[in-house]
Length: 135
Image (cartoon, rainbow, N blue to C red; front, side, top):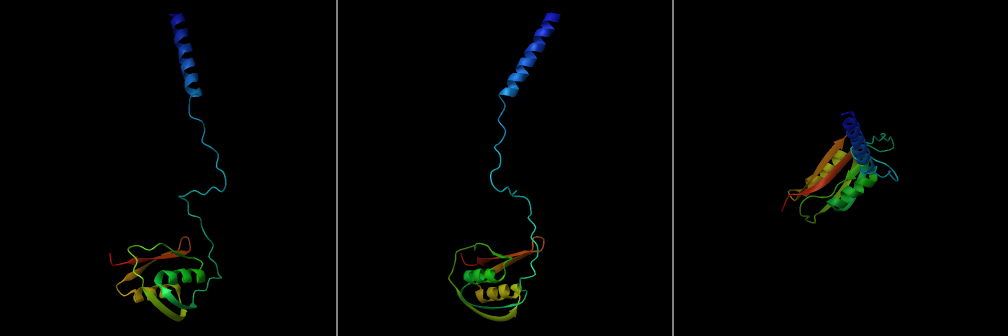
């Protein structure tokens, strides 16, 4: 009986060691900059961004948002939704805020498109995209 117990213990030990030696290798090390996708990267509010500014533009609505992005570096233009209908807009605005410009661009869309605006105070960013209403 004692011999059988010793045999079972040895067999268990050999099986356990064989299982450990055939396990998967560790994952490869991260190369380059490591940025988790589910982590919010806080940005510091810049005092250099003018809250009230002048804005003059002629072109399409998407081009207007892109030009607005160059004046307001916390502003992000997202891709348009829907089938694009070329619509020319003209803006000559004095002493306006970012929200006002976006609202006026949406008003000039007049049933063809609307501008969807999102303000995210947690990450201090603003974003907008154009949603075309006609299929």
